[in-house]
Image 1 (tube, rainbow, N blue to C red):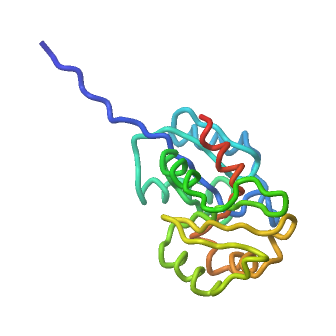
Image 2 (image 1 turned 180 degrees about the vertical axis):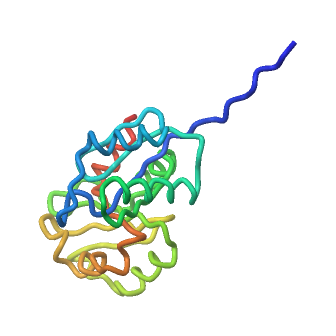
Length: 184
């Protein structure tokens, strides 16, 4: 009796693209989804128009991240960088958010990083954050950040995060966006 060959288990992944649909880099969700389908991923879904892709694959690690970044560069002609995580990891990160989730005065953000040293450097350079203005706390593979509504580009931490040095290793998402990545 022949035994069936066991198929590798697939894992739900989240690709967070940096710098999509800002600064002249426009990628339509349908085109982004099509690329991920062409790459052979299953159950592909984009979330919002800010470079969030959910997909299933049995691949993992740096090689998968590199393959996706290269495909994005080739297809869309920009210097593509992503943070790649499992959906389970994203759920754990969201659940650990240390500040108020709903606040009339502040927005909740998560800064995702693919380079621990860069996240540590951001924390060090941020120094003592004025808690009356914003809050910043280190998490596992992320920074948790909260800033006044309407000032996500103007605070000291926002200006630090915008530096070119962090472009290839960080991307920021509103907590509500992150939670939308978990519903599937």
